[in-house]
Length: 236
Figure 1 (tube, rainbow, N blue to C red):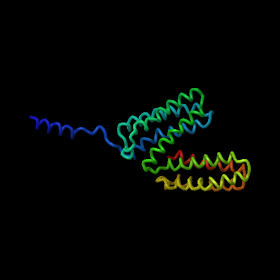
Figure 2 (tube, rainbow, N blue to C red):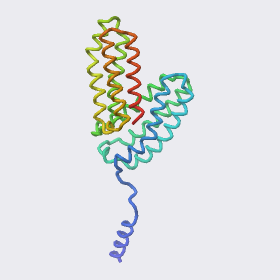
Figure 3 (spheres, one colour):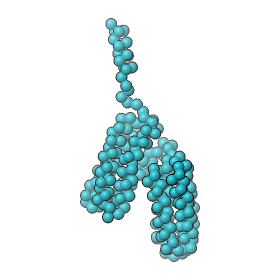
Figure 4 (tube, rainbow, N blue to C red):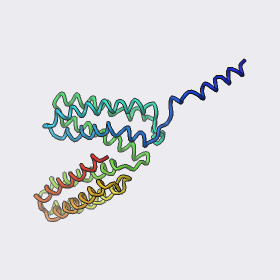
């Protein structure tokens, strides 16, 4: 009788689909695209107080969609993230950020909301790079760091000599960071290739403006560099 029960139990188990299985990264990345797109809109819209109402809508959508993602992958951790011991907590953190951001928006503190949302960018960046994943998003993140620093330093420079020092110190880093975007798997796509060319031209022009100490040209080319970055940021 015991033998028959064991055989029956085994047969039953074999006919029941596994409840928990490690998913693959491609599927995870596909599911991530919707909540992450809402996150990017939220981040962009909180850059200006005038867009506060639109930002609230985007943040609500980001929070709702990310909650669905977190619920799914807290139970089914992608194999590439198997070594992340606190993965459920990590992937759920953006939901809390979304809720906290919504509260800040209700208080009218748009700047604080924007700064808090930035944590999601760094969270996903760290999650991917520490697990050996090469992505367009993180190549863009690398460039964003260099871009923000060189433009901030240019604003702080008091004269032509100072602007030239900024270029000498940060110009090569900016240029190399942009070229690294071409190392992303998606770089062969026509829209990315076109934007890479645009950005390359803008970066070179910004560096020239810095060398010349031309404040007007620096502002103009700085905007062009930002626009090229934004195109890449919203492609991913």
